[in-house]
Image 1 (cartoon, helix red, strand yellow):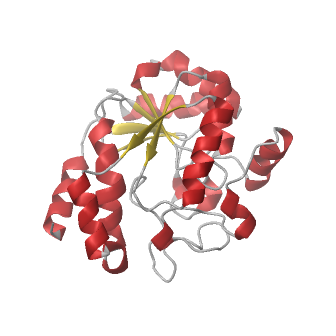
Image 2: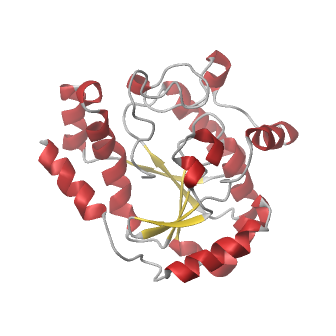
Length: 241
């Protein structure tokens, strides 16, 4: 596989319209409506405005994923949750995923790259020379192949996490789908308070100094996102760009 193949994938993801058929004015109206709602009300309202079978929820089952998943388990218990299995996750992440799945009675479905493409990144150790390419193969493309089935993609990004995320709205059009970030304006303190009040479990690696957890090759202990793609300007896997 060459970088030109990856470029073709990136280009195919680009789109001038979204599957929900919403205009810029429609998206602005949604943001105006949802900004005054608390997190739980936002999630309840989502299913009044959109059909559940058109909503795609993803989770990395990382440091504090229990927060968003717990809320969805309460207000949308039948919502499917997609987990991108890159093949490079910590065993602790897979154990945490199983724990939360049972605890919240989640309906989780794994998403993976085509076997031969993933095997290429294993043999090539692509994460060392081109981490963007590795993420494109193991994360971006597999989820993009699902994206066409849905109008709304729910993700738990928060503004305080990175400079890029600081620019996000609750609803945004991204690569042909409407992204919904119900937690976007939640502070770190508010998140941690919810986790404490509901006695939710952190990812096991949090106790070892990890606060942002991805693949084994590209994750080290560190505050917030500083432990991801260490010694590299990369701060995002590409899913949310």
